[in-house]
Length: 159
Image (cartoon, rainbow, N blue to C red; front, side):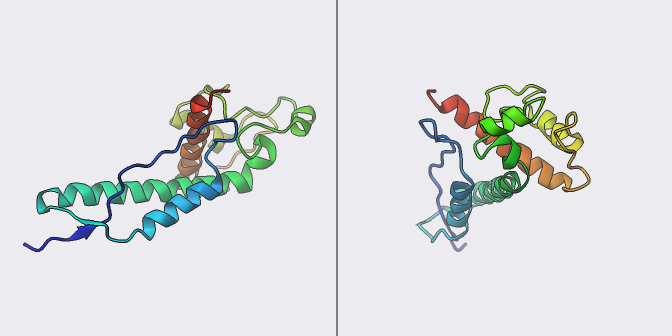
């Protein structure tokens, strides 16, 4: 049986340090690009071939999904919620109720991925538009997963 070559991705981290550590659209995009363009680094023994291939494909799919979520966030959400999940002071003064702090460890209306997706889909009050008529369910899930990275980075930051 011939050995197939697979790229090895040994370590990826979506957390950072400091106040500006939230996963940026650019870093997610670069991560996805690097996964798609990884050169063959090592040969994998046949007994591990299937497991590594599945891990690689799963990681690649996650990178694509997070990239899509980050791009959607930048296009549809950042105007009110800010580029890193916290609304700018100007927006906080204009909108009542104020937009939720999406970099917070816990959200006002629930922090599970399912609840976040429901809030995106159905909207909240007068200021938070519903997106079920603008986005597919896959896009809503991708956006919800990206929002979770804002929370993760908030928990990792020593603010």
